[in-house]
Amino acid sequence: MTKYGKKILEIVSSSRSHMTAEEIFDALRQTYPTVVLATVYNNLNRLWQDDLIRKVSVEGMPDRYDRIQRHDHLVCRRCGKLSDIDLGDLTAELEKKAGISILSYDLKLNYLCEECRKEIQEKGM
Image 1 (tube, helix red, strand yellow):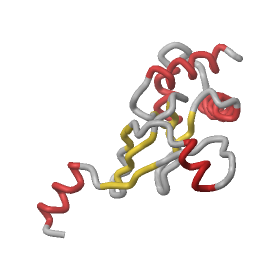
Image 2 (cartoon, rainbow, N blue to C red; image 1 turned 90 degrees about the vertical axis):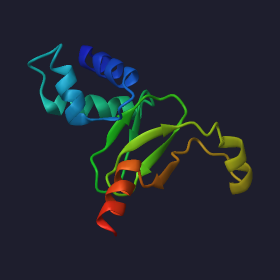
Image 3 (spheres, rainbow, N blue to C red; image 1 turned 30 degrees about the vertical axis):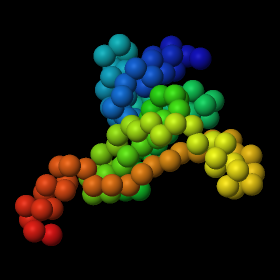
């Protein structure tokens, strides 16, 4: 793994904010000021393919990257805010219902965050 890959893995693994590639790029530039964005994307893809980080995709939003630890996500349908939620490991239950062995799953629960609910109520929507 390159020095960039190691630092990117450290940044993603220590963050709880579900960073975009651009946010990771900004953080990486604190240590390596001459790094280019393409290097970040290449390393993120490699880390994701090697199952060292998770890629969280939400329609209409840039991909975000997360630590590999088993957890699920709440996604605000309106603003795209992404929050962690621990529902436990549902693998065995999902395999039983599906009737097949699964490699992994990515559970995203859609909701309206508190800020969006307040804004909608204030606008009378």
